[in-house]
Image (cartoon, rainbow, N blue to C red):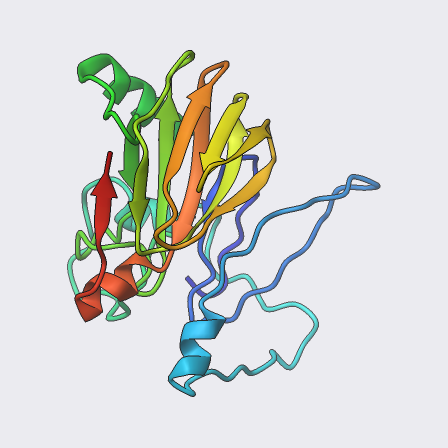
Length: 221
């Protein structure tokens, strides 16, 4: 993934994995850009394994065409020959347009889950596991007028509202949400959603790390 450039659009999931040079830029003239970073710094600090190195120049060189990682790994095929050994997904960008269409197709083919609606996990296509070994990343669709059953789990989750309006009740406290809002459901606190319009939520948590250590749990209802 070194040296590949991508553009950011609302709802896109973009990875900046460890052991990889990366930088951020905004070429738009006068148009501010805001995005949400999800980091595993606390896990690294727990194991005293965190460090960083700055690139010697202001911007890293771009050596691959835009979309190269998607062509190589994002279409249910992989190149012959040596493959990346990292447990982080080799796909650099998961465009929201594709994620949204997947959720729409899924909603037409099966009933909504009582707690999560239609929820999917972003994966590493080389392993079938999570896109990152320490951070789970998810996207879900809740239909208009949906009232979920309460659910709690040991992984605290951070949510970003991509589309829709409604309310989320966390441990008995009720909050309204709308597009671009961010909220947190702490570990083992029950959450329940009620939607006023069709809603898409992106979320991330430390679920993969908890599952690897054997103590992730979920309680529904």
